[in-house]
Image (spheres, rainbow, N blue to C red):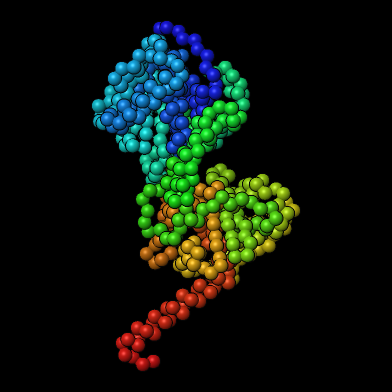
Length: 514
């Protein structure tokens, strides 16, 4: 096997490459998932990593799959060829039909996975699944089972998160315990032999699974997720130092257009968030992200309004708002999952995010949380704990709870009117930094009685059953019906008048005098 010694200019690479370099050289990583928005250089960076690390440095074989064979030439195969040309490596590779040979003896073979049952034992070191969201779960399971017999074998998957009901999320991501990792590599010294600034290795998000236990022995996590968007691509937004890369004005403008016309599409393909392409039966029928989502920022000169949902699963919820007159906007969401899903941790996170806030904080939530709890000291309840915590940290606060909780059907109707601007003078917008709130508005369904349908699910790790949606929109309900109290009462009054008028008309039509 020929040895190749090359030195690359680090300015040829995007952040994804540096993370891939680290993970490809980690023999404990079995599954490497690269996902996020389009134009984030996922495929290009994977091709760079396979060509440099797997083929040139290791001399190891790679098998690249797409679901349909006919799509290979114009997509992933072309990407690999472009990388070889762009890096000036033509002399080291021979390109054939759906195969690339390296002078080290390594081969990169491209195949369609038209029939997963035909897959035999996979003896290559790495398998790349391009657009894995097009694959069936059965395809993935077959590949996972066939990859065996060699140390350091890996499956590298790339995709856009088109549907939050997809098997990738439900059967893979949701079944892993999520351990957050730094989204940048500090003082990382890899193939490029340079200690580059961590700004040049910053992706959107990175996390790994739990340690692996086999026969009583504990091994490092074998599962890692790298999320990136166009904002992490220096050939779309330019490099941090502005000395290399490219600012693609048209691509950025196109994403901005999607943001204003089809926010769901923008959320998936620009922000790389899990989407929801199939809709229908929503409780908040008038919610439309492109109309109701804005880039709301915290204003230290205005009070904070915080609203709580007391449920602890899937997370403890605090929603944060500000308002002025008949305008209100959501600026933040705090959703802490296990093991931090306690009120204590949630309040600590709130204080961490707004440590210097010196204006009043108004407190909203479910009135039933005023009930006494045998687990607490006498006189203590959910809201007294919140208030005591804020007082202990020198925050001025005031409780704003209704005399009774607003009727679910009525508050839903009111908020639906508010969302389309039909409540005179009033407006409400949600920050684009509140993805779980946006997801809740798009996902919570309407029950047959006009209330919220509280779909239940079970956490794959803790096995706790909980309501899947409705927690964040519940906090919004409590806040909005109290903040716009006069408007809400007037709306309910109009509904009652309308019902009485309809009934009288019907009796009159029947010829009955009353």
